[in-house]
Image 1 (spheres, rainbow, N blue to C red):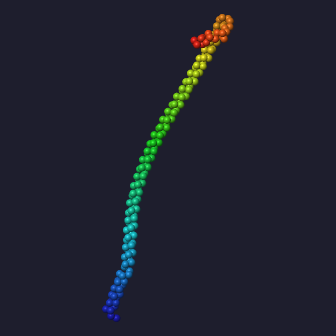
Image 2: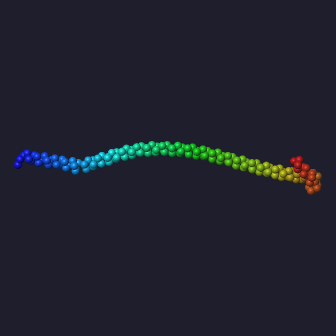
Image 3: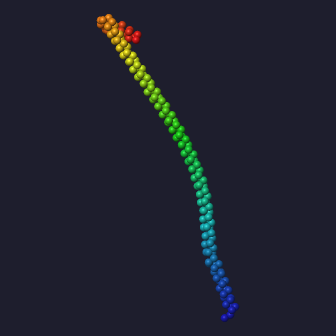
Length: 156
């Protein structure tokens, strides 16, 4: 066998293998590599978008927390004001009720005082009649002298 022919056949076989690889094997491999690169690039872009969305969500969350804290402090302030207002209203109502009770007690005392004065006048008049009766040693007719006794009660 001739070495040159063998080398030529091997060179042609290698050239055919290279041509076949470039024509039929290399394009699908390039497409698969390009597709894989594109998926990796898309995945990295999506990861960056997700990272940006996470940062935005954290910022919005902090903003919402700050707003909620402000609202809570506002509600707390309003509830404290309302609590003080309720306490003041209760104090005013209690004072009005106390004033009403005191006024009622004063009226009752005045009524009882007038009643006691009237009873005392009647007792004094009865004692005066009894004293006059003993002095005169005779009975004084209270019905006959009612006008005189009424004047006596008025003077007392």
